[in-house]
Image 1 (tube, rainbow, N blue to C red):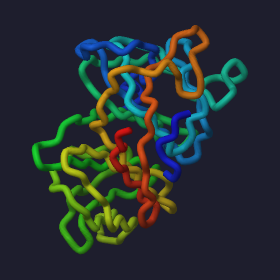
Image 2: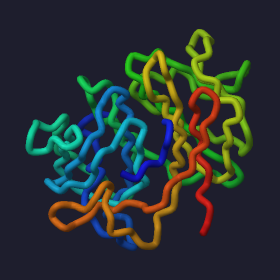
Image 3: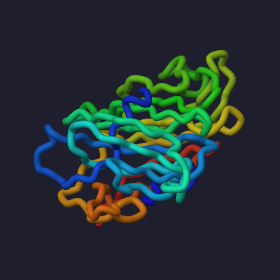
Image 4: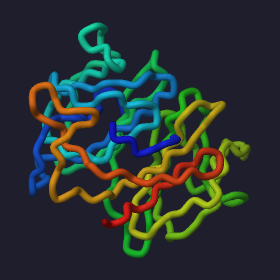
Length: 266
């Protein structure tokens, strides 16, 4: 499993994340998708798409890089790690993907109420600016606001399970906080770094008693070539899912904030 983090919408819209495809020059018939394991009490999971094994052992707070897959319908089954053939899947559904789109799909809620939430991602920021949105993936967590400390909210009333619209921000360092609508601080996000030209999603995960923030970059460029390896191994049929080989860096911030830093060029 390619692990991007060391700390760290609806079932029918699960985007068929892990279909086995080859990289194509045109993107009108494909989509870019990534998966986030955001269920705080769920075990590590294996994922099968169209009966192909494509992900092994994804754990809570793991996220994939973006993958390309063809537009169309796919069957998806999710099993507790190592139980395929021994137990029923935790979740089984037929799903569809729309070409030319990008998505983050999160396995959310508690394991007894596991659901898959799909969020449409943006790939571009305005010149000279950055973009940020907030996702609320904490089961039974209160509605929250996100804003600068002792300042107005940038995002208001985020509820589980949802993601806000993107907001344009000037690049820089922000002293942010996650707080209840009544103003009680839940997370201190001092020193949040936002880089010009980047698009970010900040997902609140964990539990109401132990919340965390995962900050993902949404506008990672697709590589010119795709590696012939799967997440945790190749498909049993000999085909492989399309995955990035590179890892995103992370920086642990106050109260468990994970900050993304741009990958350094080799």
